[in-house]
Image (cartoon, rainbow over all chains, first blue to last red; front, side, top):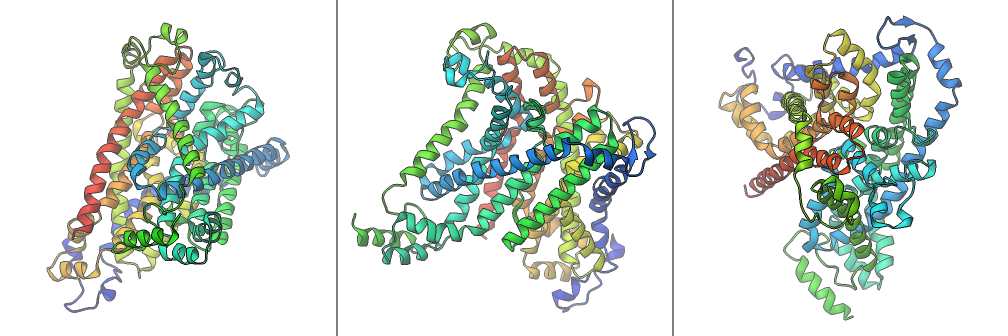
Length: 308
Length: 297
């Protein structure tokens, strides 16, 4: 490393030292770059390539032109999977956002409960989706579950055996895991709204509802976009939860794109068509990211930390 | 309600602190928000409570008693059964994969983030940065088929190393983004004085930037550890033999085998979550001390 001893002279402004060309700096990025290219960039190019081949996952890989794409695009399973993916995104957004907003606004005004709530609210985020799905599977079991044990007939349903119910259960379990997190995001957002805005509104005689719709909601614009981005991008990748909870069933009612890809590739051994689905998944993800960025006018990557 | 008095109270509360919404709004309580919050708190707590108490019930008494009543005769039999089903092995596997992936992921990301911040004008490093940013927008699950192919070709299929390598790659983009945002906040003068003292970049990286951004490093470490510990798709696709299973996968197979024994299944859920809960509690403290140290400078 001593070969790369600082070349800058005494008294050089900091800006000049930031050039870093030909020094040690580029080398520092190499380990991360190598691993990321090897297991991120190359697979991304590879998935496009594999979508023009036929491969059963074990044997040889043969070029097969557009066959996989023709199979996938002609299959009614694709529009269905796209539709289910869209429904999951839309329903989980529509269910989580108002509730998180309401809870977040409430929490922002109540210091006392904050510590306790923050701990309790974090527990669902710490659990793996596999663990959550397994627990809910047991909890919702029509014979051995909570409803049966409490003898509440309303709760004794074949929750995972009927399409509409199973879909609702998926949305509920997703919300169970993530509403607390989004509430905490909104809580943070509300706390950053300048107090003076509310004082001015109060002088003008604005009531609670008026203040909420004229100040809180518009001021939370970026928070709403951040939270929505996390929800939407996250919804695209709910594989573990759905795989363990319903495995895409019943009757493909919860077969989202990611699950469709897995089933075609690793269960039906059709890696070509599965890769085509994966390409579509990438395109949908990119389209959504661009759409949200345009809506927000701000970098959606700015705060993906907790929800990616 | 006396409006002027309320406002006066708020003003005193707000003065001296940052001008932000703080504490009570001094109005009628927000009943709707309170009710919904309380309701959702119950929705979050009840399943967790049910999972924990049920895991201490004997299978026979589980069917006979009120599911929400605590066990009359708590038993550890379920936990014993789970532990005897090779869970210690799966625990060690998860630990190896998590540590084996998180340590290099955070170290590599930190080095890359430092290079990107300090050498921003270089074309190479700008390119690297855009590449990582692009990686954020792409659902990495979609690359799983080529990853599977690469792992097979490297003869790493059904090995823990085969799980570690893609896990590092998947963790890098977000870690680099977060860490570089924090390194950017380190005052330029500090880098300058390190340089004047004759320190090279490697020393500046570990002795200045790393300690100063410790809260970010802790946060990124916890986040990545959580993702990898809970990871399900990679073990599902890249391993085969039972002795290479990690906990989430073991949980799934265990549930498939013993689905009728609800208390045992729930004990396995509790056991797999416990380590991450401990990490979170420990890390939270570290996080807090890191933050307070940062503020009291």
